[in-house]
Image (tube, rainbow, N blue to C red; front, side, top):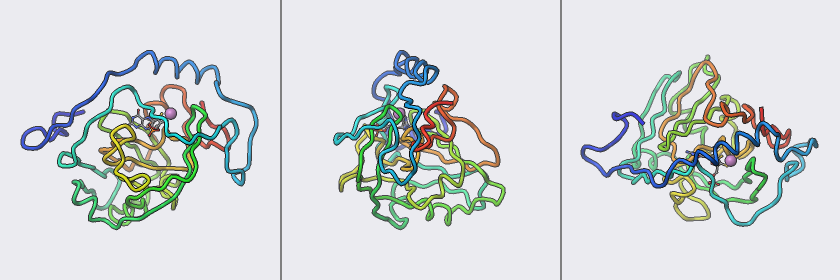
Length: 229
Ligand SMILES: Nc1nc2c(c(=O)[nH]1)N[C@H]1C(S)=C(S)[C@@H](COP(=O)(O)O)O[C@H]1N2
Ligand SMILES: [Mo]
């Protein structure tokens, strides 16, 4: 992260807890080459559980081995790029936006799915109304406090079930799961849902993120089993 992005001078510090797990990242890259988890089946979206997925009732934690500790006082979310009204939201500014509840399923490429998660946060529709993307904007890139990145087409992100969430099952999102604020894009594999988000950039061209440059599928539709490129 850039020095300028840190709030180090007069606020609480953002610290990184843990170490980057190079071996784990390398293994996942190997899996993407081998096509691990692929069944060759396809399923219509009418089927709730995507092919090759199994239901879990716990909520596994997946990250690169490093979890940023982002105190609310240090939280900043920049939303910029090809928009009419770029903004940087602090915690109070984010919470002052209209808050909504939603329920959705999660599907992770490592083959677990979890149904009926109760979320609270800000609808992406609200964010789009606020920043007003240029008509030429076609993609978004998310950047996180652990330097993770992931990308989406704007139409994927503008779906009505996409949110910036801060609560799960009535409680603040924990650091493990991306608190204080993470992206939620429930109709795509969960690697598209950036935890600890600090920047959303609208763009007129696609730029691949962390896993997309390491063999994961750019589109990531679970019902089409778009696990790997
Ligand atoms: N910032 C950040 N976001 C991230 C990740 C990450 O390493 N860093 N991992 C992604 C992956 S691969 C998955 S499967 C989900 C896991 O979210 P969870 O730990 O809350 O289950 O977060 C996604 N978002
Ligand atoms: Mo993942």
